[in-house]
Amino acid sequence: MIGRLAPVVGPEPGPLLPLRVEGLVVEAAGRRLLDGLSFTLEAHRCTVVLGPNGAGKSLLLRVLHGLVAPDRGRLRRADPDPLRRRLAQAFVFQKPVLLRRSVRGDLAVALAARGVPRRERRARITEALALVGLEGFERRAARTLSGGEQQHLALARAWALRPQLLLLDEPTASLDPAATRRVEAILADLRARGVTIVMSTHDLGQARRLAQDVLFLWGGRLVEAAPASRFFAGPEGREARAFLAGELPD
Image 1 (cartoon, rainbow, N blue to C red):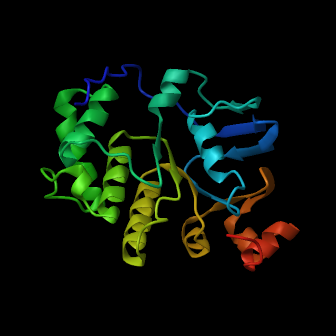
Image 2: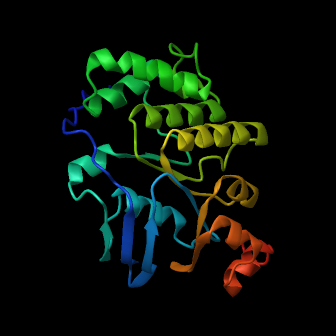
């Protein structure tokens, strides 16, 4: 049985971006997993984090969301209030975390936990399910959906929370090409609505289709940060050039 969640009640989210990352370091067992990362995330853009396995992509997203505390360095946000920051962002994992509830119930619990008034929840749920093409699925058990449908539900839940910043960790890694393109269309729609997106992916075609900016990680270091057009036309670093040529382990 799922316990009743205490709602997070607070003021409307203030401006979250730009977000400036300065000298970010994460260590474990004497090894630097993230090594001195510095960059800026601007509002209303899609930033794709690229790099081989073990480069630190997923860890970076978790630090940005507050799931992992850095050992050194700072994350400077436009709004310093931690509660408003929490209310202003959402995270979608590679494998969606869904409750043992109906599709509607899954969204309703998330909205209640965020402190959204009951009278507003129905409208948000209806709009979010329409956005991802899950109209008519309200009574279905969330965990019986297909893999693509579960990812759509995770995106609907994230959008229902009205985030300024949406973080996604390889959201299409386990999906077929058709489901992948549908998720990409949803992300493009969200960005058109003003959501800032930061996502990791191993799919270079997807990165080319979605990214406006690229962060390329190698061995826990930020090797290159550049507009996507410039990065894919000709990255400056040796590691990035080799990665695009398929010469590094994926």
